[in-house]
Amino acid sequence: MSVLDEIELSIDEFEALRLADLEGLYQEEAAARMEVSRATFARIVAASRKKVATALVQGNALRIGGGPVAFAGERSFRCESCRHDWTLPFGTGRPAGCPACSAREFRRVDAGPGPRSGPSGGRPGKLPARS
Image 1 (cartoon, rainbow, N blue to C red):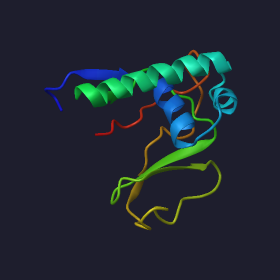
Image 2 (cartoon, rainbow, N blue to C red; image 1 turned 135 degrees about the horizontal axis):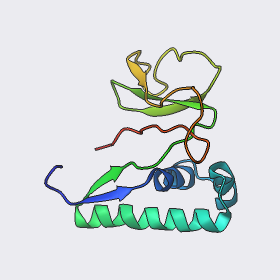
Image 3 (spheres, helix red, strand yellow; image 1 turned 60 degrees about the vertical axis):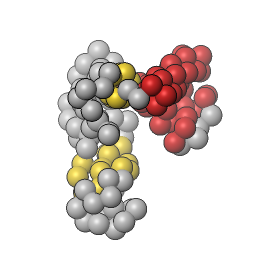
Image 4 (cartoon, rainbow, N blue to C red; image 1 turned 135 degrees about the vertical axis):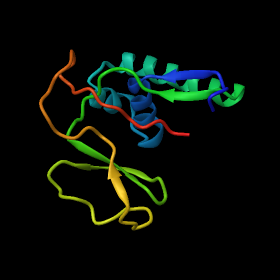
């Protein structure tokens, strides 16, 4: 991967793809979740799809990162066994195991609750890069 040209996908672009293509939300609902206008969401998701398509077609590495991240009431987990990612709302307790494979070896991958900071009121955080 280190010898490949990289294309960077911002956190906003990553989230737009997740909401539109993974969760299958309509643009109005996805835009509301991201707290942007529908037109802005459409521009973000179009740019992110173009970057992903370019990376796939040209064989580039895709780097996900950049910018502050606000956690909107959910915790993110990753299974160490099957690499499945999932989210749960705050206040629901620790999960018993991975919903995909039932393994108990998983970890939290968000920054967790804490004081708010940053220009958007969100907390800075990182999403793990995927290979």
